[in-house]
Image 1 (cartoon, rainbow, N blue to C red):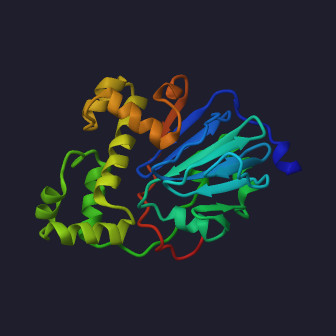
Image 2 (cartoon, rainbow, N blue to C red; image 1 turned 90 degrees about the vertical axis):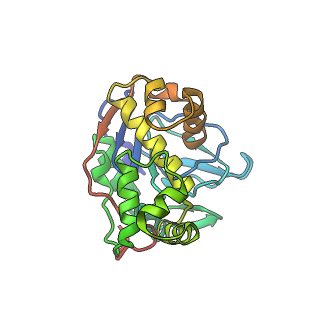
Length: 264
């Protein structure tokens, strides 16, 4: 831990967010989030110290660790001992979640700790690194019909489309589409569409659109609906975005989970 603690941080007091097609990265002071459950997997990394994860209840603490991967839907609390941390939120179709998990130790359902490259990742992020710090695993190709659906969602299209519309477009029945999508991506279409909407809204906000307009353009019923989803996803209100530096990556879109060739 000594080497990581000696890192010189690049503006540690100024939080920043980096977005790509399938990832959202926060780097900065600990967010002080209480017990919550995220809608997507989160890779948590202490940059200058350690962190503790309490699954299900604050009394069920882990021992101090450098890194943890928390699965979607797991109620938990994260306490960071130092002054800076990173939280990487992973799209359900991103193979990186499986790649990270393969190199970590399971200690609870949907909770893994101790990535072997945690210290190196922390140093890179502390020095100003963003999403390029995390490699894209090699993956097997998806069904081209599902690839087309994902691509359209990630371009901000089909954010309002229902199962019947998408299934008709790719030439299969509703039930066949739902089966194909879940088998390929790992989550139901409607859940994935909600993540795509939120990701699109944060991107629009980061490019200067106000929150209300970002909600409408991302197919949310209202700005309050978007705010509720944001809080449930990240554990903090959207006001947490104010004052953050946002950047956007053109990383090639990763593929579906569990199909990586080599762990990163």
